[in-house]
Image (cartoon, rainbow, N blue to C red; front, side):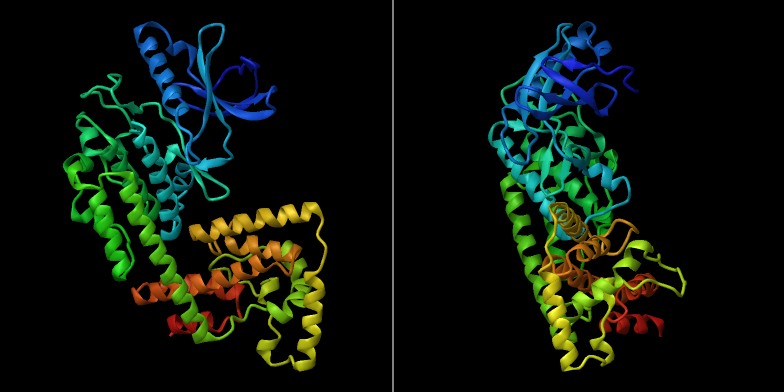
Length: 464
């Protein structure tokens, strides 16, 4: 249902457009002229406010503002105020958040790597620990209600069916929420408490990792081993522990789950710390084993970037299976040292060029663009979009940043991380018998990093 006509104002707020809408209401983008800030304004459709059902909906809407307005936490959307217009239509004003819901990513088939998934869910649990301590149970935790911001932080939104302790607004037997993310007790219409939110949060974690979520019927009868077998926890002790953690969080009986969001968060934070340490150790081993990554950075960086900048901006990165001969070689792919043509005098000269390039003064606009590219590169890297999809990946972001600022260390380190992850993932695919998939990924990786010896070795291995 589309909005036929947008109001010009709601109270003191100027309406600037529609942010989103559903069957029950509309969320507008507004502007507060008194405080000079952009806001989001949530309303109910006027035709739904008629009769007894309309009054119940209005009370529910008021309670959402009441529940969310009492919460002040960095991971919860802030509600500024609740009002009614001259015709009695209620609306409440919230902070305007620049971000997208997790549902928008998942609906496009984008899944998240373990590091980023733990980072997101830990923030959700920290926010829930705060709300639960204040007697507020969300009861509708799902990807659509979790907003992901550019700085990798999240915001929980929509406390529309929140249950406030000592309230009779949501009674036993009243089933409200989204069935696919129900806890078993919620699906059965039984009394719910904070542990129901933890169950739903665990389901979101499963979906972030593998795109897997149970049906409402599966949840109601309890999740079995085949469900967990569909999740890829990775090998080793860490994978086994993650499986055990999720099985505990998704127990049918609430008494057998984590008893608080803080406890659940603490376990995930411990796993994240161990994962970070493991990745760091593996990265150091890879570096020690292969020596220097042949990136064309360091001494050859300045000359290589300047020589290849035009080709990177004018031509596309080929997709897997593209056998065109004329493939542009991006800036970071050049490596004269690899071919043995760089003697000590040339190295010294190239170092001088690189140093001069590093000292290049950037305009304010260039600095802002580099900052945006670095932020995008970091997000792509964390999510696992290394060199695909075409036009939106970590490789492209860091390469563009290096064109503008060839001496940027963060972009250089990002390119190194991309190669390390490509090598690690390709090895995992080969070891698990998925050589065909590994070959396709390595074919693309070799086009982008043709001088990387370990990628070349892995490619030759799957070719044999």
